[in-house]
Image (cartoon, rainbow, N blue to C red; front, side, top):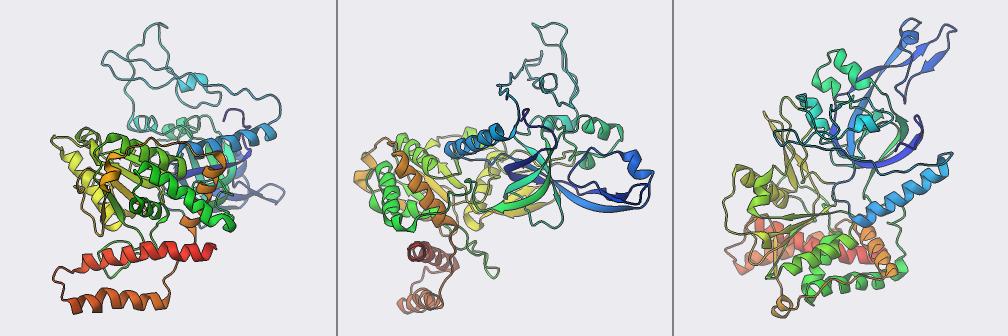
Length: 506
């Protein structure tokens, strides 16, 4: 980042973590010659020149906090890094000095960590410098303000993006921004001196922590994969599917049915959210693979999914992990940003839950709330956001795979229990690395299938209605309820989802 000149047009991909209060600004002003001048897409303006001259026009821009895409797998990160470095080498003049920053941390007498001395090392810093009297020791750190405490948790690679005009950008969207890079040393300090409230100051994050981008073009992406990965060669569809199927068979001990279901789970997504029912989203189910008695199964499944999919979040459901911290976003009255939360993920991210890590223990209130949040995702594909005095449910699209020995302790609507075959339970194999050509083909196939268009033909609606209502009533099944119908419909869509996409792609 240090090698990129200020006010350069850059491309940035990240996830919307938080939306901040709108900013009102002078968008145009008349100079002494009567010419209109624009102040859009930048911060460094001569305020005296603006306010001492003629007419002015005001406008509004929406700042958002964007962070590196959570759960992004290593191969996607490497692709982005290669593209970024190649572009920087071609664009930036002169010799680039790319260096690994030294992070300086030390403990005070209470054992807590001091913030890295980023102000001392960063050439564009606007953070107050912390210095020690003795290089070998750390002096007592001053008390951090609530805003400074939160700034310490903003991940490296974050940006404050200013959006101009009407943009339909929501929390958790993966966005691609073409914008003007703006570093404004001193802006955060000026905000403090003006005694702005914490919400007004939130968008004035020190640019040494999160540079400002003034978005000229802001687009919502359907996948964190770089452009071009979703343009699939239809002539090798069958071959690509077999490559994926073979890889999943290998890690699932040769269980063909389990491999089929897992493959379909990887390309599933929410297609609709019926308002007339509380039974959740259509097009996606929770897949519970049971009969897993060996930890190596979980390791192998996690490894192959990370190789194939662009975004995977693996969570161990142990008491210690569940009790550690809240997994869903919260924001207290004295906070400027939503808290870090491992369940705040981009839509399409595979949620892999490892129940084999469970052992006897007691769940705290935090642990119970985390289980409740997971069940909310399974039941309705919604994640609670806690704002202290009220709660909102943010819609999600997280295909969920649960690995467990017996039936999962999580109860959703329409979850599918799939026991591994007896032979598969004992046939534990390590995941072998696919050849480069095969793995590229498999990734392109999965990315293309996942985002392809899908609709239910009229004739299929009639088949579903007949099979799931009339026929079951004739059989007089006493255990059929609304949840059962929802489960059957999702499974029907699940399988039809693949057959339709197979026809479309071919």
